[in-house]
Length: 355
Ligand SMILES: O=C(O)CCC(=O)C(=O)O
Ligand SMILES: [Fe+2]
Image: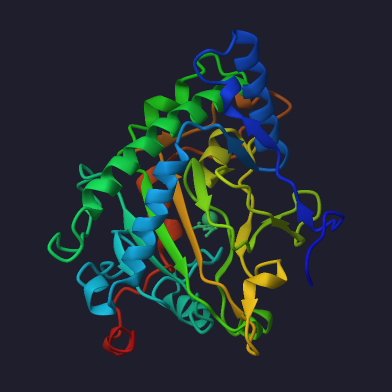
């Protein structure tokens, strides 16, 4: 089932050229880029951003560190285990620990049922070194020297770009203060995530006995995603709910999408779109009689409001014909509500023993 140029199910996301937003651009170029970005965030909720200012060399280095991390022995990765439960989202999650879904429930049994279909991925979460609510969990430097310092620098490089994107969105949707959103985004509540989807027989994804990453929306303000060329990311068609469209990777581009909190802030003007990771579309991503799918690496950077930020409809986004849809909510409460089922409160010993 190779995809072709004419395949309607292959989506070309809008491409936004950030060279026309950065220094050296005219005020007209900045405004038209910002409007293009805001329109795409309204119509699709997902865009490619090119010429974003993060160099190819730096991205290659980040993917190199990610590959070396996941190549470590399991005992070494387990020196930085993700803490039990969803409260602190940091450190190493071994295959099967995290279960992504769109289900929100207080019933932990619902979570256990969802877990019957494991997500075949491992991940490592990193936050700001100054975030006391969610302290980082590092692999000791004797075991993995250089990782902590590279990743903390990379975290802040991504944060810089995120401020540009948030300002461009604010400009594009016509906020009185285009930098309004920056007041709520110190950067200390972002999350850098290294993800590895290991090879898996295609049939397990086809018959849904295993998953790579099930359909979900992101919870924060925006997500900046870097991905390798494996493919498999799919985005829901806003105009045909339930239909997912394949996103072909574009080299060096950031895939940027809107999260739930920015959707609430904008009174649903900016769309937080469902997305998932499943089978790669190209035939050459499979090998052998079991059609093992190639390993996939991706690096999402979740940009979140500060944990005490109150998210409340921006005045420019409502009027008499379009009343405010959501009451105010504090980021911390929203995150804990959304994360409830994603991590078990207590990891069964048998689960860690078998990784
Ligand atoms: O791996 C990917 O490409 C997507 C990851 C993702 O959607 C997420 O971690 O929220
Ligand atoms: Fe996501």
